Image (tube, rainbow, N blue to C red):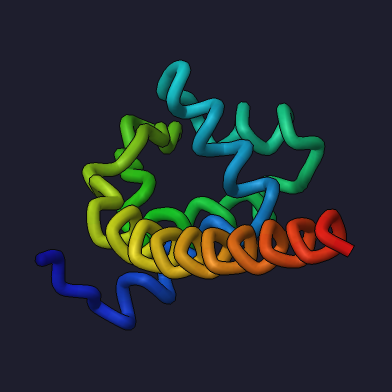
Amino acid sequence: MVQYSKRRLDQTFAALSDSTRRGVLLQLGQKDTSITKLAEQFHMSLTGMKKHIGILEQAGLVKTEKKGRVRTCKLGTCQLDSEMAWIEKYKEIWDQRFDALEIIVQELKQRRENK
């Protein structure tokens, strides 16, 4: 059983809650790139992009390294196993609820047909 770290889940989901940060992760999934290029791609200031990268880095989703004056970003080593397990737990709960609701709906249809 995967142990959930409340702090880690909070950091990861907070990082993923922003569409710009999700877009950055998609870009980095294709290739490593500099913060400057990411800022240009997303039409934002360098300072704004640095803040987004910092949040992603704290969550372990992005790693940066400085070479000269350029800070390059790449995907981090965070595997998201805990997050996926947490999501799956709640998916199972909702699946059970929808299955129970389907039974009720079928019973109501059956009653209507028998009238």
